[in-house]
Structure formats: structure tokens, C-alpha cells
Image 1 (tube, rainbow, N blue to C red):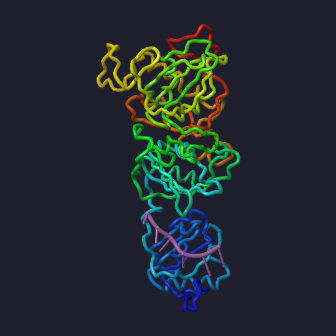
Image 2: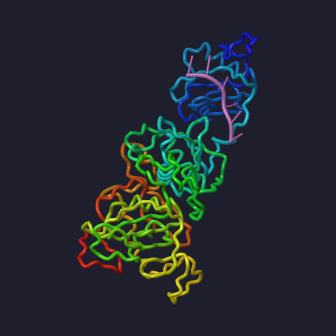
Image 3: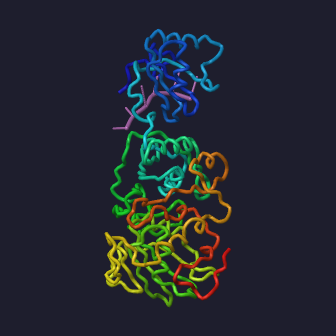
Length: 447
DNA sequence: AGCACA
């Protein structure tokens, strides 16, 4: 259907409109700056910034057509171009007569951020990395990711607009730190606006969406039954599909590793629901069940290859099990279901649900907190105001607030290890403190 | 450097 019209799509002279189209604006140009620019010529009644793919265009609308004409004619003959922050901006009449829908989203602060991940390999950025990045600013409630024409995007939900704003201010326009991505991934830049959402709906824990406030949310089948693209992580090395159940094999088991020891070690990352130990190939293996995949992921990343005791003893090797719910038939020294009250414990708590039958748990868990899982010596903690870390080179690994389940019945308020999923590299063992109550026959040397 | 929308 050939166009009868001889008019090209864009004419070099638009018919006058009280709406002006601005382009070549500096990043994050504000409404105030637009008003400032237009004020000498009349009353700016509306604006819209962050327009276009690069979000460097804007519209301003004058109360009166003559005011728009005045501005255009002024700059048409001015020797000084219109400028914002010293950057030349180009003006023309908009092909529309009024600005619609300003101030609905993107400009009004909210607790949910719309994040566009730009870059060649944006799709390879995992939800875990996003979680890590945004957790530096506060507890991340939920994340959803999706593909749109704008590219790979995510919605990141914080508890309040203030937290979201601090994340936005610090991260918008920045690149995901290189050390969070594998080397062969091209830089990924974050472009962030506010979303109009206030509470995301996450139906499943999956590689596309996570609800960190609800560890009992079912895991999407696609996340378990390794549909291939989902199961390969950023680094491309996670070939096995993630699971909430970890299979631990213990190498060089010079000392007894009991159920309680395992429980203690793995509880540092979240509530352990069930453990089953068994012998295999002359060694010992155990299945450890968490309520959710991401806790298992965190635990696996932090613990893989590390030793329960100093000196290379009882080295853990972890993989994801295909189980999602262990069937514990009897509670004994080889298997236990921590989700049901232990009748053997004459220790009825109000709401026996989730109580730890192991007495040493509470205090012992602390031994596995904090610096022992920290990324080695001298790594600076990321302060709550994260602006420092993102400015230059290599910031400290962002320390997330308790990664998950702050309100989980199993967990005391802040016993999460200060670990960062997927990125930590621990130099040695646990720092020489053996689990209480199972002291191996050697003197742990404190580092 | 060239027109928006959840």
C-alpha cells in the first residue's frame, strides 16, 4: 500500500505545537531542568523526561502555543544553543499537541524498580546476580525478569521507596561489576526507572522470578527439571539443575561428621528441613533439604570445596540432588526431619513447628556467621549507603542484608552468614572453629 | 540526532 502522501515521516519543520520535543539530553535529565530551560519563554505546564530508547529525549508543554513558538524561534536564531548541564539539546515542535500520561510511572518514586539490563550478554545475567547487586541496598523482597522489546528487564521489589531510590540512584547507568560476571561476558549496564508496581506477583521460585519473602513458594518445575538454558548459570558451569536439596559428599573424613554437625553447618544459610546421611562408595554422603532453591544455592556456593575442620579434613563436595522432598522415615543419628516436632525431645515449645531438636543449634549457628564466611581477610564491608562501592573499580562484595527469610520461623533475626551467593571465594576452611559438641581430636588452630 | 504508553 504505497503512501499517497508525499510527506516524509519526519519533516524538518514541524507544524507548531505547544509541545516541544527535546533530544540529546544528558542522562537523567530532571523535570526541574526542563522547566528551567523553558521558563524564560512561558509557563511550562507539563514535561516528560527519559523518553526514547536511550532515555535522552523529553517533551515540554507550554501553557500557550505562542510560548512554544517563542522558545523555538529564540534558539533558531540564537548563537547559543539550548543547553542542559552544558550539553546542547535540540528542540523542535513535537508532532503531538499535548503530553499524555506524565507522572504516572518512571518519575514517581516507588518501592519497585524497573531495571533494564543492557549489553551484548544481558540475558546471561542471572537473577542471583541481580539479587546480589540490589541486596546491597536493602532486603530485596521479590524479583521478576522478562524479555520485552526494551530487552532483558527485571522488576526488583524493595520494602519501601526510599530503599528503592537509593538503589536507583546508585545503580542507574552503571555496569554490573565485572567480578560478578564471568570473564567472557560483555559489560552489562543497568538502566533503572521506577515501576508502578507495588507488589509483584511471584507464583514460583524459578530462574525468572523469585520471592525472597516466601521460602515455601513452590519451585517451578522448569527450574528443577533442567530445561537447559535455565540451568546453566552465568559462568556456564552449573550444568546440573538447581534444587532445594543438596547432595554432600565428604572427602577425607578423618573425624566423625555427625548429623548435628551437618545441621549446624548448613543451618548457617537458612532453615534446614531434613537431613539424610548414608554410606556410598566407602565414603559418607548426605542429603540436606532446604525449603527453597535459593537457600540451597547460597549454601552450595559458600560451602563447596571447603572443609568442616581445619587441615583439609572433611572436605565438602556439593551438588544439587534431584530430590525435592526427602522422605525421612525415622529420626535417628543418620536422618532427621526437623520440620516435625521430635517426640523424643521432652521439650515442647509453643509451636513446635520448626523448633530445632538439637540443643546446640542456637549458639552454635553463630560460629558460622559473619567473618568466617566472609570473603577472606580485609575485604571491606559494604556500608548501607552503597554509593561508595559502585563508583570505582573494585568495591567490596556487596554485603546483603540477610539474604532471605528474615521473617522465617526457623530463623533468629540475623543469623544469616554474610555471604554473597555465587561470588565468594573462601581461601580456607571455616577458620578453625569446629562445631560445638563435636570437637575433633585435635587442637583447632585459630588463624 | 529525529517523537512517548502501561
